[in-house]
Amino acid sequence: LSISTLLSVSACSSIQTKFEDTFHTSNQQHEKAIKSYFDEAQTQGVIIIKKGKNISTYGNNLTRAHTEYVPASTFKMLNALIGLENHKATTTEIFKWDGKKRSYPMWEKDMTLGDAMALSAVPVYQELARRTGLDLMQKEVKRVGFGNMNIGTQVDNFWLVGPLKITPIQEVNFADDFANNRLPFKLETQEEVKKMLLIKEFNGSKIYAKSGWGMDVTP
Image (cartoon, helix red, strand yellow):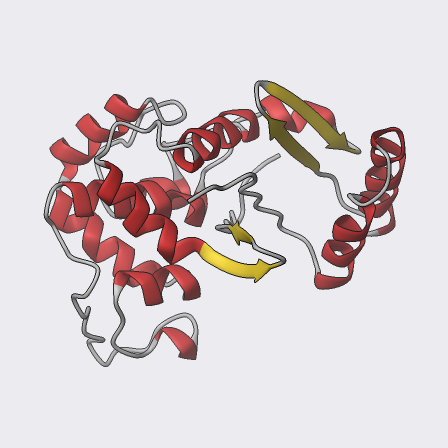
């Protein structure tokens, strides 16, 4: 399995389409075009592309590439890796909905980890984190070297509200290591989680991705 790019972009669909079209143009046009897309959307952002050992940044606020943010739902990748590696769940286990109202109606059903990854269902991954426990979770986050490696004292929300934070550059390096099976987990575990991240196939290529949406976070 070969993964060339794992890209997470928080943008409206029209802006995302423009991004996709832009990457068919020359490198010299990328900076100006992508900056204009963020400007048109009246927002600030950065896109980071890693190819081999080379990292390129594009956008209208490049300082964000080195600014720490909560990982939000992008942490589901590592959460799943830790949980599966430590036998806290399996890929076929059904996480039962407790019948309580959730933030989104699409979360109100029974799900596997893969289903919950696709829907970015927070409650399922909070349950997985509680199974892992605070001590083991902290140990594993530190072992991987994810972001500032600080998960605080509450095991089921540290990636949503802090204190865990990570820069976009660090996130891209994590994704690159994951794509190339360099994370300190069994190959089988990494492949199981990658299957949950497949979003598109075309012309013999596969795209794997995970979004993350941080709420009420500054800057």
